[in-house]
Image (tube, rainbow, N blue to C red; front, side):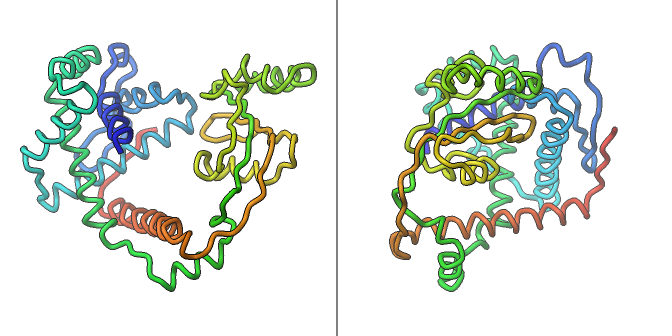
Length: 299
């Protein structure tokens, strides 16, 4: 939980930042009601996430639009966030990320050229978005016994134990498609590990791209898991494209699995149902907000 909160802090610090060089490309790219979204706002998030393609731009813009929609909905509903709640959250962030030293927090904001009041507003908006999502979506999501039994029966492969595998990954950043041929040629004469160390942007590149004894569904996105499931031992996948990133995967080993009992899998079953229902309800809510709000995207 602490690591998650620190990650949220990083997002708060980063997403609200305005880079010095962004003014030259700035301009309004979308409107949500009366709120404008600047190109620099989208570009800033893209840059810090290592994203470059036009598809990435639209994906990030859509996320910002969703956030503006929720904040507008909160305003329309006259939802307020007590200032002491915001203060408590900032104290919590200061304690967890800066050892309780407010001077270090201020120094971090200064290094990002982020005014304190802008940072504070970002934290307040985060709390409002979370509160709205709870009130409209999360508190209505339940997993009934019948739904859990049906899920357990329909997807036995999700509720197993001992099914760990080891895979090696080569990851190319967006805009590096030209390196695919280079990697493929290198693999004809070099080991997968050596090629990963030389070309991969994966966090395990120094270890030759090795992800050892893992459960893929706990680490990788569905597209990667699907590619891994098709591989025999020592086989290498085709390139898998996700949001501009290119993945090449080799299955190194796999440990046989056995099914968990319903009781042993209870928490996982409940979590999977709640996740799926939350995603569906959240999507329906956003669709409603989009129908009720003027949205203009400038090409």
